[in-house]
Every structure is written in C-alpha cells, then in structure tokens.
Image (cartoon, rainbow, N blue to C red; front, side):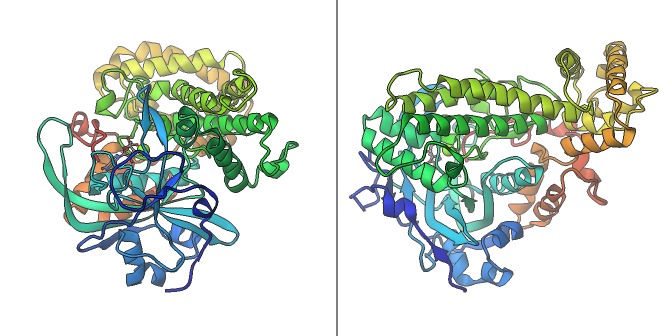
Length: 528
Ligand code: AMP
Ligand code: MG
C-alpha cells in the first residue's frame, strides 16, 4: 500500500472535545470529537468508483489492498489517518433541532493529492458521541443508493460529494423501514464518501445558537481559508488573522447563496428531489450532500416527494426545492448575523440567490426546450407545458428526449407519445398539447437555431439516463444476493448520461407499472 499524504487541518486548527470516551453527549464549545470506528466482522468491497480512486491517486492495486479494506470498513486506519466526528446542529422540517452532529459519519482525515484536499468520511461505521439514540450503522439499500447517486450526479454535471467505495460489513442491522412496527434484519454496509469539505450550514448554526461567537468566527475564518481557497484571493476584503470583517462575511455568504442557487437549478433541470433538505444536509460548498430518501421525478409533478416522512407536508417536494434552499440560507444568514453589526446586513446575499437562481433556471430550461436563449414571455409557454405534463401524466426525462426529435416544421404529438404514462392521458390532453405544440414550434423557429444546433442544445441539457428509483431498487435487490452486475451496469450507463449507449435501452424506459407504489421505488423513508 503506497504512502498517502494527510493534512488534518480540521483537527489541528479547530477546537476539539476534551472527552475521548465514546458515549452520547452534548459537546459544548468544540467542533469535533475523537472517535474510533466500531470494527466489523467480515468486510467485503462490493464496489468502488475508479474515477474517485484516480482523483485520490489510488490505483486498482491500492483499492484491493487488505489495509485499504480495513480503512474503508472502519477496521483500521492507514498511516496519517485520524478518525473523528464533527459537531453541528440544524433545522429539521422547519424546526430547530439543537445539536445533531455526525451520528454515523466518521471522518478519516484530509487526504492531499496533486494540490487538492479531500475529506474522507465513512458513513455507517458505528456510533459516535453524536449518535443520540441510533446505532451509527447504515444498511446496504441506502448505502448503495448513496454510492451510485452521488456518482451519477457528478457525471450529470451537478455539484455533489463523491463516493469512493461501497463495503458490506458481514453484519446485520435492524431497521423498521416504514416506522410501522415491523423491524427487520438488513445487510449492513459502509460508504466512503469524498468531498473537499463536509461542512454544513448546521456547523455554523449550532455555535451561533449557543452564543459561542468566538468559535463561530474561528470556524468561518477556517472555512474561508481552507474551503474557499480559490475564491478568497479574488476578493477585495482579505482574511486577516483574527479579524473577520463584515464585508468579507457578506461576500462569503453571497458566494454560498450563489453556489446553492446553481446547485438547486441543476436539481430542477435533471428532476432530482433531495427529500430531506434540512439545514444539516446543506453543504457550505453548494454540493449535493446526504443522499437519503431522494428520488427522481418520473411523471412530472411539482408536488411529488419521495420521502414518506414528508408525505403530509410536502415540504421537500420537487417544486418547493428552490424556496426551501432559500429558507435554509436565511437560517444560515441568521446564524452569521449574530456576529454582524446589524441584523439585515446580509439581506443582499439572499437577493443574489433569487437572481442567480432565475438566471440559471431559465438558462437550463431554454436549453431543455432547445430555444436558444431564454426570452421574456417564455415562462408562460414553459409553465403551460409543465401544467399539461402534470395533468396528463407525462414522464419528465422521456418528454425531453422525444421533444428533441420533433420536426419543428411539422410537429406531431405522436412523437411525444412514448413519454405518456397512459393512453387516457394522451387522448384527454391531445387537443391541449397540440395547441401548445403550435406555440412552441413557432417559438423555436423564431430562435433561428439550425436543427442540429437545437438538437445539440437539448442533448446537452436533457439526460437520457437518470437513476430512476425503481432501477436503484432492482440493483439493490440483486446486490442483497451478492450480485453486483446491475449495479456495475447502471454505473456504466450513468457515466455518460447525455449520450445514447448501445445495450442500455432498458435504463431509458419509463417507470413500469409495478413500481408505481412499491416501497423503494416511489416511497422511501428516512430509515436507512
Ligand atoms: P439525516 O436525516 O440522515 O441527515 O440525519 C440526521 C441526524 O441523525 C444526523 O445527525 C445523523 O448523523 C443522525 N443519524 C441518522 N441515522 C443515524 C444512525 N443510524 N445512527 C446514528 N445517527 C444517525
Ligand atoms: Mg444528514
């Protein structure tokens, strides 16, 4: 096993918890606690991402090394690794939840490769001081979903944390999947996640809520210096030792708002629904983080949420994601405002969120519809289309695939037929859609794009392959039997999600009827 370089700045520069025993507790005035992963009986490397391994400078041989398997399963550390869990709070489903923290995530340190920094983090490697009443473990179904989806999102061009490996533990974990009094034994698993930083909004909210203002300032300075190292030097207001100017905080918060807006605009473009947009699940870098009961829009429906816990309120449904992202930024702003001269000093950053979001969203939708540049008045046409798609039950991904094939000079609704879930939907909304097609085709003609430029624009914005919920579930069912063939094949298709690939036709198909109401395919819970 080659020597890896670790530079564990979080531990070196930020205050830690003096208590080193591993028991559940409140941790005041510190940002991390030392913790050793709980070893597992029979770890097995089920899959790893060669792209992430390469990013980290790990060869195929390194990935097969027994010492690496130990590290990826929590059974040992490689030289330079130090293990710890971080402390954060968060607003969950709109309510302040106090201290949360890495309850089942254990960091292994900051790996340096080619001048880049990567935090490595095991999810499911055992209890930490932040585990509250839970066991610190994770099951195969949720781990596979996280592993595969974070890689799929990366290849879609959506900002995201990455996944290096998926390991089964050889141990079982008890889960009551739907919280209905039916606990079952499930296969235990651990994902090794990778990100320049796993810092969340909640890391800042907790010190602010506890009046730990020096700690809050220290964390902000640290984050700007370590995690915004590319951005910070471009700013007129520099970070001075021990002096954090209000101007710099505002500029930094504005940057966070921008990155978050870009991320959510991408989610809306590809039809991704995060499912648990609590502030502890929001990355300070604007990366998609914490893949839990997420889902992909099949039949277009802004009110759809994959999370059964959210079924009543639909707080985290597809259509509300931009509003919720902004709400979460407001909570982060509240935390930062505790050290600003006055309460509304950060408001302009939220305005910036609104304008960046609109710019990116309209650009994305101009691309999806192949209209060249977005123009005033396009909103009405696009909204009318979404309204019809919802009412007629039309598949989001397939709709845009087939819309790209439309003959703009002679548009026929039949071209779009494969995207309809039912014949009834097609027949009932035929006249409405045909009317819409006339308006749409005129708009596209007015853009003066050549047919090939239009096709290119649409193919660049509309994925052919997304990790439909039922596909992930099929890969899980097989992986439970130790068969990773579908996992590997799906991963392969999702590496080039915008390009048609021979032999991958099955992954383009719309959700089959049996999956409409099946657990794991349309309904997911937080139990993982
Ligand atoms: P989530 O909703 O998955 O983002 O988790 C919210 C909080 O619960 C975080 O602090 C997690 O670390 C913690 N948590 C979730 N599942 C577990 C588990 N199985 N064991 C310990 N902590 C957990
Ligand atoms: Mg979380």
